[in-house]
Length: 443
Ligand code: FCB
Image 1 (cartoon, helix red, strand yellow):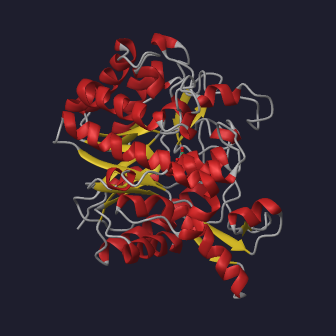
Image 2: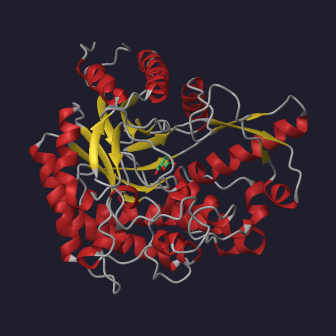
């Protein structure tokens, strides 16, 4: 068993749209993921998040599961569409759900870590992230959460993986809202970082005793070969993944290559935005799953981006069921790579996990692939912590099998199996291993 300091924090992570369900209860409004799911062909299995894991009704059972597994920390997201109405006023019924959830966590000795935006943007906001006003609406929503729930929330992240909202949502178009336009994706990225900065200001105008941060997914990108064109392509991918989100946090200008890709839209970034984005932070959350391999661009879209991603050969044995390479060394490489470039605050690994679609057999799920993945990554993490990197905790993705965005329910990331017909929860082998690891004597 890998050994961690006794102060190391162990938790699991989820996101509202992926587990809650309760799609139209208590005045919940539709999000852009609801409208995206309703468009034919967007989600692999044609599913949606209206019921999901029915966590909205079963949260007590789910919190009890966490407690049983020895998880003392829980990262979840608040659905903006549940807690604010169309006029931007607090929605008491939605806030009450989170108050009850937080009460239950408190009762079980589990410390919450809430993310304010995990992709489920209210559908009624005109233009979504392409409209600067959305950043201000986010700040108003943040202020409502700070006022209404802030006394129950010791640690809060503004955004989850803004790269996905910006680029999967507005360039590649496989995530809501499904736009495919390179300059727009960069404008969305800018507005997301502006929202982050305004959100931190808004929260701190209400309370100063909360640890505030942001959750990023700075993937590592290796070139497919030593050829200078491939090396340059990998560099472009890293600029998009890392510099676009980390530079604003430290009041650094975007790389010139990215500004150029925005064309005339770059004028919509105001000089005064830089100081707003660069709010001092108490922590940074890093999500790590795999690495990418890039080569020189071929088609027109790739040329606009400056790189082409090469998916791993699907016959390789070291892939998870979603097709992502198992590359634990990347966790160490990506953290060191970031620390060499940006003065990061203390780090939490806010997501890490694997798709392993092993079914239940005789009421048990032997998810050997996930177990293997977690063992490799936690051994890597233990070495990193021992070597002195300031990493304070780990949240496994995810507690439950859930709605995996464009993959629908076809990919299972939970350490707990969910039978979507009966909503029965069954801890898998990986959950039992993690339970043992957490209770293992630490240094
Ligand atoms: C991350 C997301 C999370 C989940 C995992 C598998 O990018 O933050 O919601 O879908 O991937």
